[in-house]
Amino acid sequence: MDSHYWATELWRITLFVFLAIVAGSISGQWLISITIISISYSVWLLYKLNNLNQWLKSKSYRKNSPDNSGIWERIETQIRNINRTSDKNKKRTNKLLKRFQGIVKGLPYATIILNENNEIEWANEKALSYLNIDISKDRGQRIDNLLRSPEAVKIVNKKRNQEIEISLPHNNERRLAVQYVPVQKDLKLVLARDISDRINVQQMRKNFISNASHELRTPLTVISGYLEMMADDENLPGHLKSAVKHSSIQSARMKDIIEDMLTLSRLEKSELDEESCSNVDVASILNSICNDEIKITSSNSHRLITDIDNRLHLLGVESEIVSVCSNLIQNAIKHTPSETEIRVSWKQQDNGNACLSIDDNGPGIPDEHIGNLTQRFYRVDKGRSRDQGGTGLGLAIVQHIIQRHGGELEISSIINKGSTFSAVFPADKVVDINK
Ligand code: ADP
Image (cartoon, rainbow, N blue to C red; front, side, top):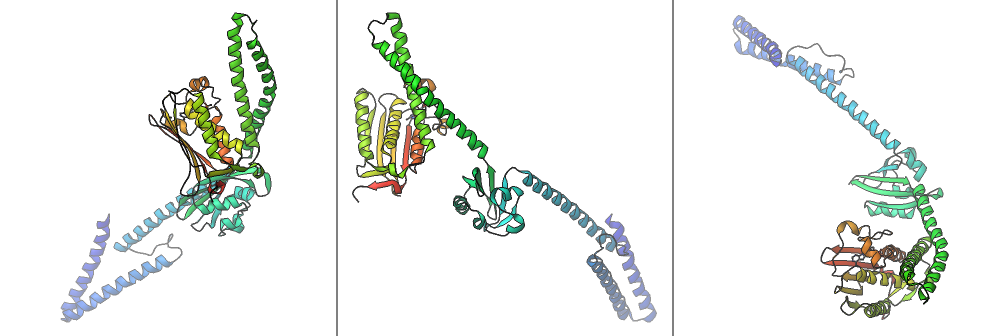
């Protein structure tokens, strides 16, 4: 209780006052006596302060304490309590720090902590085996001076949360996914994980699909051939006619799926070959597809409106560009009801990019499906797509082709308003024939 300390202090003051009264009444010099006693009290206070200061300065102040009483003892106890709390906090922080370092050490990721200048502050052991970054030597170095991959340097300098795939610096067969994560202005993370196994499994899956499609193609061609022959045979018994007709339709569907699967495999296997690229007249491709579609679809069906820049050509593989255009236009017709208005536009944007946009005012696509549309065999309405002869591979093929040409497929849709599928090609692939 503080009153106990103040009581001792009051006793001391009373003693000094008593001494002043005694000295004053004996000497008759009241002013001098009070002054001397007051100075003595002040000197005593200074002495105590000095003791406290020496005690705090001494290295052993946590263990020993000066011989004190009254309010001085109280001050000393308070200081001791503050120290004890701060020691406890320090221990807790150290324990937390050790736990955190243990966790980061044990992570299957290479983890590098950077400051605001992208200088390395800390890195775990995986950073050495994956990226050759040794914290005992490289602390304080800029990460972009140490990373060997130009793509990795690019993402670090872009200062955006982004992930890229690179090869291990000393082993081209292993692949890493490197992610740059800006946490705060002065705290950034570079994370890298080994994704070679995932890529190998993907590759095995792709090879399997490609081989299976090749193997199925020939027997299916034979079966389709015989079915066609039987369908044309006038002597075919009546009860078999419908079975043969249905079998023909299904084998034609299977052929379409296998052809699409082979197209996808071919696109995945090879990079775009510059030599097979030519100056593609996109406008005439679009005009010819639209004219064909108008002839095929009945007059009360879809309305096709075109807004096409004839001067705008594209550097690319003609057959692949034809596939993008026809897939997107046919999708807009297949997946919307009759009387839907479809706008086909091919124009250059202000930034020099060229954009092919197929816009319909059909029923639209619910938001949750949009991100999945380019996955193989993904359909919003499976039954309807099959009835329309869809393979579910069209948009996967379209996206691959656009990306091979350096572009992006953008999809947006609003329920009851319609959908827009845009293929945006970079300015360096655009050829303006008037220039
Ligand atoms: P499909 O062979 O079924 O057309 P795609 O890969 O081309 O396969 O398209 C995937 C799915 O995307 C379609 O099944 C359909 O549900 C949806 N889709 C594509 N284009 C449109 C569109 N213009 N309007 C509404 N849905 C569309």
